Image (tube, rainbow, N blue to C red; front, side, top):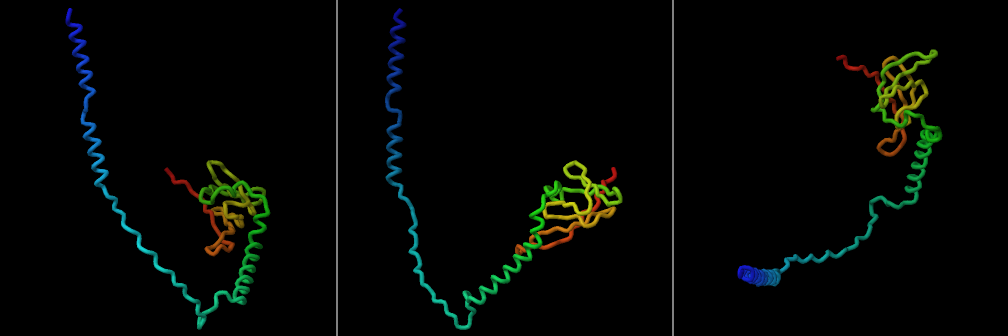
Length: 181
């Protein structure tokens, strides 16, 4: 029964041999050498160019800060703002209608009829059917219905142009016929 102490001695020897150096010291030495040899390559920043201020010479050029010119520009701008405000002010003061929450391209005219002698159009919006008459508002650009025919709805919209001025434009919503299958 000497097998047990011999096996135990062999296991202890194996465990002690695992505690010896395993090349980790060589790895640490290699990393230290690489760090010492690595030189950072940073290109130096060039010196800033000196600022040379230039005087403003008003020989034959127009003065940009002329009081008369600024006053005229402000008058012109205030008159445009007043005309723009007159166009959009009534629209801002009134209560919005339900169909003004939807863009026109999401609406489809699907029919028309005369209801109590008044032309009425049928609109499909979000899979719901709405009846609209003259004077109702549609779309997100303050579109007011000005005419209803059997095949179209005429709208007067108030939109901003490229310069930011409010202008009126006429838009038509045509009858949408389903493709026959």
